[in-house]
Image 1 (cartoon, rainbow, N blue to C red):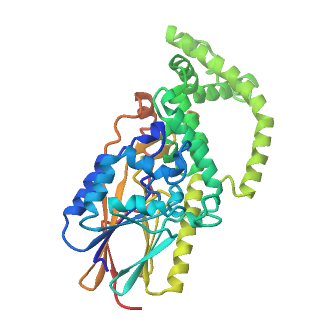
Image 2 (cartoon, rainbow, N blue to C red; image 1 turned 90 degrees about the vertical axis):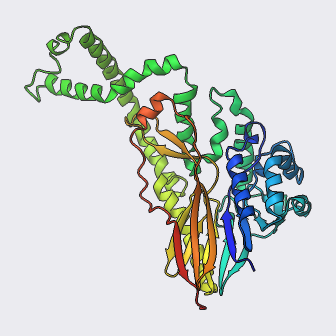
Image 3 (cartoon, helix red, strand yellow; image 1 turned 30 degrees about the vertical axis):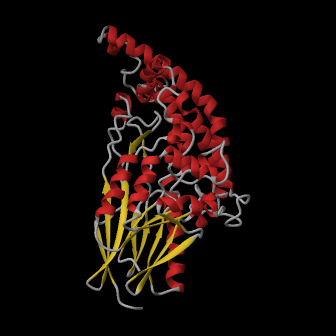
Length: 433
């Protein structure tokens, strides 16, 4: 039995073309070397999706795993070296589901001291208590394997990921800024359309066209205000003489004339858009109602809450069936968290992939900004003085300057994360139930 456990997940290493780069390669190697140098009995558990096998479109079966090893020799050499000093355990996720389907994968990983367990969940002992570990795809209808271990029984998520994410890797370099490869970093997946629109507007749209549109978009709100004021004056509802009085604009000279021209054009566009928008509004409202009824279209925050609650309910079931289980660990959703349920804890191991947090633009009629960041996190669980100690650590990584000046300006209003930060240390009682 190991005295200390480390948990990570969702590395998604590997893929074709643009996905053949691991942004956190140096940090992962440093993490493995650090564990290698620590004294004591320890085990590193990778809770699924270590590799992005679904992202390969031109390789099949165990050859996918061999392709990953060939792409990242430094990482696997670090696994080999660290595995001499500690146990490294890997369970399959959905993105590396082929690991569960071919016994050859066990033999392929063995020389790198990676112990592959071809199961959906494992249990580890910590004192008199137990730790339940799973990837979590079995709680996700789109990624649940209909027959675990059968390579031909793939869930719906396989076809979506292989086609869209795989092709994103193939075609990403054709873009202006090689951004399409980050498709797998968009969470929840329902935000993908907004992300595509954002990247088209800020990165792929012809710069001349974008800068020509900006003045109209920036002044759109003012145009609506002026249009409404002018309408009130025109129909005699108000007795002011501000919006229809050319003296206000003429007093500003050339700037006033240009401003007035912009406002007139915007007002005309607003009227046209208003006329066209009425039937589209009615249709879109009815369509939205239909999609919500089928639970396909859900608010971003509500969707995240629903998914998290799904795993909390799964943890409650595990705790009820075995009172000695004190910790429930999962990954899959890429949202690191630690939630206490009485004297028990539910942990989401997060992801080492780049994170893209949606921030509404300062002007709401402009596409939102997806701000990049990294959270290279891990959980350490050990027993000390008759208690279970859960330590949370993060490797810092700079995402670079991926946003241009316009995006940084419009994203100045940072997204407010209303979730409580994960405590650096959490202590649980260790007495037998």
